[in-house]
Image (cartoon, rainbow, N blue to C red; front, side, top):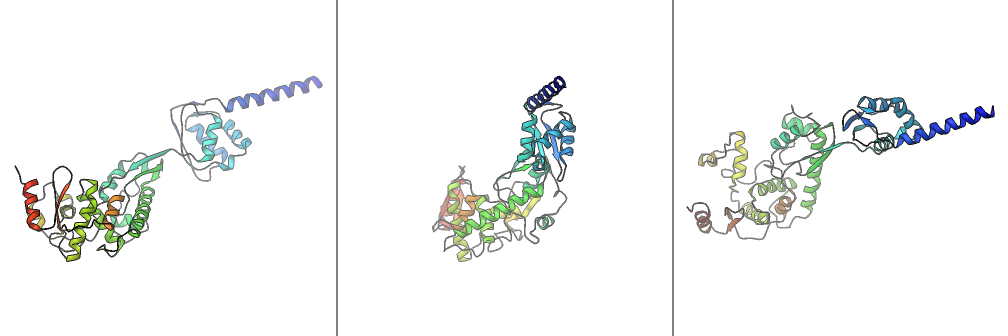
Length: 327
C-alpha cells in the first residue's frame, strides 16, 4: 500500500508539474491572429469552447479547468479579442480577465462634412454600419439629439473602438467630444465677441476652418467675420455657398452661384448660415471666440496658404488684383 501511495503521489506531482509547464507554453493557432468574440453572460465553459472553435489549438476541457482552477473564471469580460502567435494559456486568460479587446481606429479630419464622416465610417475596419441607412435627422435622433443638425457636431480626432463595434458608438464618442471642446472654448470667449450662443460659435468656427489656409491666420479671419457681424455686413464667404450647392458643386464656383439665393448663401443673406458647414478643430473653435483685434473687413488668399487682410474695399481690390488676377 505504501508503494502504491508513493506511486500515486509521484503521478499527481508529475501531472501538476506538466499542467504548470503547459500554462506557459505557446498555443498552436489555426491562423494568426485568432479572432474570438465572447458574448455577455457566456460561461467559463462557453468561453473555452469559443476559444477552441476560433482556432486556438487547446482542448476546451483543459482551458475550462484552467479558467476554473485559476479562480478568475467569473472575471472574464465579454468582447472581441485577438490572440497572436506566442499566446500561452496563462497570457490568454490574463487578456480575457483584463478585457484587452482587439481595437481598431478611425480618424475624422478637420474640415470634413458629415457626408465625409459617414463615408469614412462605412470604410472603417471591423465597424458595424448600423447608421448606413439612416437619414441625417434619424442619425441624430439615434444619438439622442433629435432636431439637432448633425453638420459640425462631431469633433475631428482619432477614435479607437473594439472590433465589431457599431458606428453609432464612434459617432457618440465624437459627439460628446465636440460638446466638451465647444463648452471649453465658449467658457474662454472674449467679452467683445459678436456671438450669442455656443451654437453660433460652432457655426463660425466651421467657416473659419474652411477659410483657413494657414493656422496662424485663424484669429485674423475670425476678426474679419466678427467685424462684419457687428456692422451688419454680409459675410460673403465662398465655403458657405459651396456647402449650399451640395453635390451640384463641380469644383468651379461661378458668379451665378454667388447670386443664387439659398439659406447658406452669405452673399445674399446677412448673418451666419443656419448650421455649421463642416467639423471645426480645436484651434478654429478657439479662434471663433477669441478673434484678433483688427480693423480688417476683407481678406484674400495670397496663393501660398496665407491671406492678405484689408480694412477698406479699395485696398482689398488692389490685393485681389495683385494676388489673384495678376498674370
